[in-house]
Image (cartoon, rainbow, N blue to C red; front, side, top):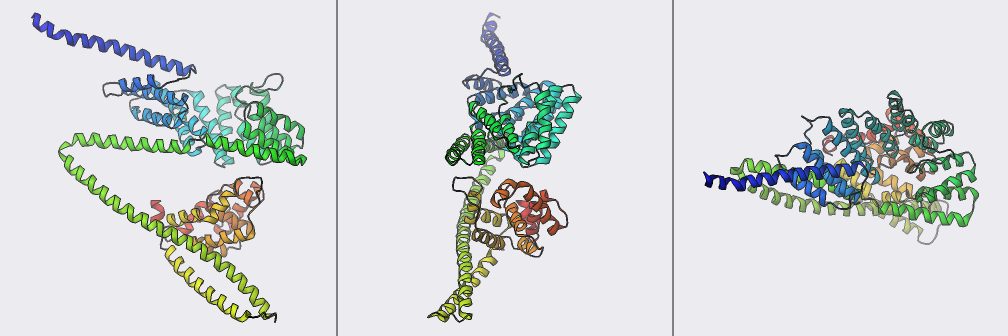
Length: 558
């Protein structure tokens, strides 16, 4: 009896120690959550990693695992490591049991997705932010958190503006305003308007902008008696500056733009001050603020970690699938050698296929470069031939003119034959490959470069537009034929080409030296002529569908 008690003593001590450790870890988790809720910054990932090591086991509840991974994600968020934060937020959502969840689990989930949306927004990744906001609102509703549910609608308006969806901005703003008023948040209802105000100002609808500015400034409770906005909201001064620029009150606009400098919004500040001095035609100041604007934009872009976040998300998916494969392999251990054989065989096939694809890709890119060179030479030769022919026909015959005409005609005939051969080869490619090659073409790269303002910026010349049209026609023959038969204007045709190439409305307006509203109208008019319905928002999708009429299978796979 005494021996048996002695044998049980180590087990009892281990159980006692584990109970003590469980209490300590629960206290550590609750302390970390308290710090996070009270905006205390994590300076290390040690606590988060300790929590994950302890709780990430099947015998702990899914809720505890969710909370542990959420805290680790928050630690990386505070440490400025956005990709790692996104990775562990994704891991946290994977741990949640949404089938048997209660309101506490839903509350943690909406906070996780809210943090993900914030990071995606900071890194200028609107599509990912929109998806995170959708889940944020969904779980806030399930957690019976009405306020955060409405906040998801309010933040959606900002995403819509970034995605060039002005109607979406107004719709989400109105919905958020209505819900805030319905549930008694009157001051918050008035605070939803800044994005809509900015959209109205960009579209030069100053009367509507002023209407919502008055509501925002009088009813939101965000302004003091001297008209200063609450801390963290100072970016609104850029909208104030734009409004006064539209009213030709340049001095008032300048005051607001200079306040932005003080509050650290350097890009908006310098961009606004540049417009001020352009209106005053002060050349020295224009040069100064052009350079400062470019520096501020470059600094902002250098801080973006979007690519790293995408890679982190991809790695998360990879690890998730890998872990699932390992689990399944353990359940069916007797088939391990077969699985290994399949993996090795797949790797060999994959390696062989990848090598062949790379070789094919190199050949295709070489063909694309040759094609561009041939088209440019062909275009130039035809122009030279026509000039020589005109002089020849007008009896302005120079020595050797007839011989030059004959040689140029021979070269033109040869190039035409080469164009037919390469065009035939290109049309055997899937739509996805043709689109990829077109977007990587040097003339398209030239137009993409022209969407960034520089001190020596000028609009593309006619020869560049002609070169773009020639290349586009060869890669997208069906669309080009439809446009050729639809009597599109020059602006409508170029708008269609750039829309198909996924240029934004504002970029197209910049390249064609016109307004955003005119490009929107051009999209509607082109859609009417091409498809009988003036829906400019569906223009790119419909152009793609035309080109994919003979490539339906490839398009569905893409």
